[in-house]
Length: 229
Image 1: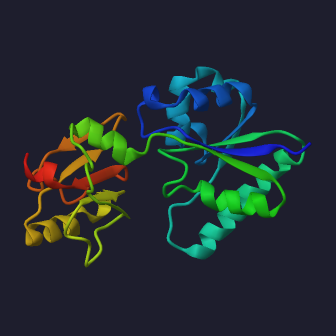
Image 2 (image 1 turned 90 degrees about the vertical axis):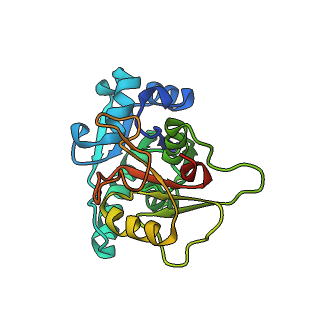
């Protein structure tokens, strides 16, 4: 029998926000994969370890995923990671790949899923709480209601972004300077959560409070609730 690859979302940072299903699968399976060069350097692993301490006794598979926009380097790293996973699957062992937030939203898992399925193995997705939902809850704000629209962007606010609805910018930290200028020009307000649910969490309730640069795990919300604060 062939093993199954599970993409498991561990939520945004607070281990109490991990799902019961994610915790159960970690306890029931032996091979745990995660992005990073070691367990200590993987945010997804550290979150899971707080919720399920016995994960440390599992077979741990650290998969180096360099943070680069170079498609050639990324492709090579995804190929190598998929090959290592397939070696376990071919022996009939399931592999759990841990990923921050939800496994279907800007997740590395999609690249691994494509390669593993192409190699003839099955992949399944296990939902986790997405960072923007956790950040909105932490800010005490509603993302959308009624017939409001929700627009989600990775890393920056593109020119021509919709003027109506709620805008969420994920991984906004290194682009904050430019985003703040765009928001000032448009007259819109926003709120920012840095490291939501993690150590070093910071909250900024207005554009003026925000720095021009923040950490990688920074998420910005622009909506009517923000303008009312």
